[in-house]
Image: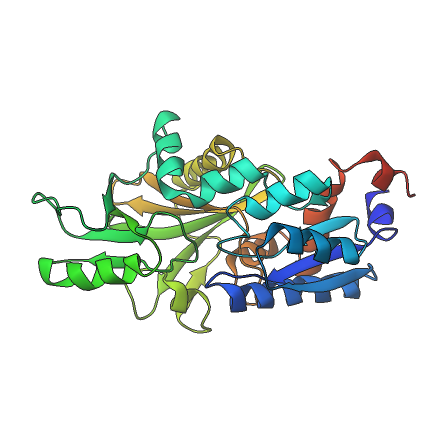
Amino acid sequence: MELDILKSIKIGVLGGGVSEEREISLLSAQNVYSALRKKNIEAVFIDLQTSKKEEVKKIITSYNIDIVFIALHGKFGEDGELQSILDEMRITYTGSSSLASYYAMNKVISKKIFLEKGIPTPDFYVYTKGERIPEDIKYPLVIKPYFSGSSLGVSIVKKDEELENALKKAFSFQVKVIFEDYIEGRELTVGILEEQPLEVVEIIPQKKDYFDFHTKYTNGEAEFIVPTDLEKRIYEEVKNTALRAHLALGCRDFSRVDIRLNKDNIPYVLEVNSIPGLTSHSLLPLCAKAKGLDFEDLILKMLILAVRRSKEEIRSKV
């Protein structure tokens, strides 16, 4: 029945956008569009090149679409602004609400929510450009923009001499950054689909200490082990922690949760990605594949979840 609905409506796949992640977003959107066409579902590919509210409304209205599949990353994609516009237009869209998207994108708010809910997350300090740097800094630490995605602007700092360049890199994105404790251990990620955790993927970067932007989107820069070889109890705890983080922020339908497992096997949540990448190198499709769900069926599932909360006029088309 729900698949019949998808075949009776028009899907707008939004990609591109105005953030530093534009090129990755175009790849994600093209993959989504191709998957829908393979399933004989009517879809249009929309390369969004503006964030001006009235222009966005005009573009979306011109395509006469029923549901928007959001494949935008970073600013004006994952920060809730676009979702707010679509809410105002009363157009159904994939993924989390405007507020949950904002929470997930804002690293300070999300970490505060994790702490309130008793979800382990690395200790952190918010630093604004121009302030005096605390004298009691302990290395190694992670410096990251407080409002960004895809590990853009992120550095691991191991000594004083590296601090200036790391701050300069982060400040190229925002004037506020986070100093975060570096958790020694294993880098993991967990896909969430329909409010259930998928398999746990272990990420082993081949050339760097962490999974940065270049490593994420360059073939061969990291090894992915799925499912990873954790003891069953720890494996389940990692999955449960990921789901708790997803729900704590109010995310819905799907996400991907990044975790560091320390030497005592405590899973620390780094962040929740409300719109995970959907490129050929992306991790949510890998998590789904390990559960027996191929890419095309994953995309259909993401859309079906949106249909379930759509307007009556969409559901009544069948």
